[in-house]
Image 1 (cartoon, rainbow, N blue to C red):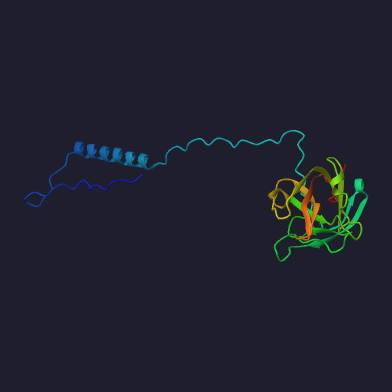
Image 2: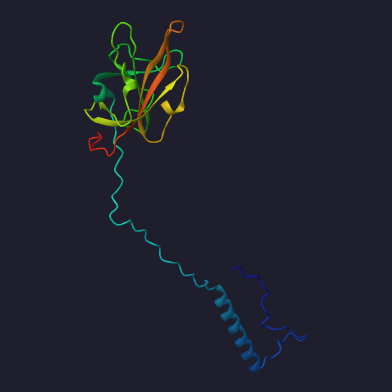
Length: 231
């Protein structure tokens, strides 16, 4: 609180013409003393801090009974092998990037599969992508029968740490060769594995097939402590 300054009261009185101060009766002195005492008490009271407001006690947040702490998200290694029991596929996984045209590259060998290393690893959040060849005129290729996969089929990816991540097929879709569907590479919700291969008729002029087949699969939960999925 800020107090305004006031002129001090003239307690000595004014001098008369003779230079002698006038006499002050005892009664006047007593009244003056009481007035000063009352003024001092008022100033002291006005300077006291205000009574603090009551602060409510903090409310404790209780965890639901029986709730388990959230399990840490497991880390995953680089994929090295791909197994698809329904198609009798047991194939190595190599890493691939982008071509000069900005498309996902493909593995060199017909029996190899290629993991797109610029995206998530299988088991991580988002969509991991593995591609493989099909329809070779010179012999069999790893994904010749990929279109035969149906919802519920299992896919297994083994990483370089020896952990196995399990996925369940959800659906299959076909795309034009030069489409860039976001759901194949850019899905960030959930943990997915998308398998890509060629399908459709052969286009001699373009040197490729007319369609692309994508099999969408979702990670099987829960994960074991080693980072692999368990039934």
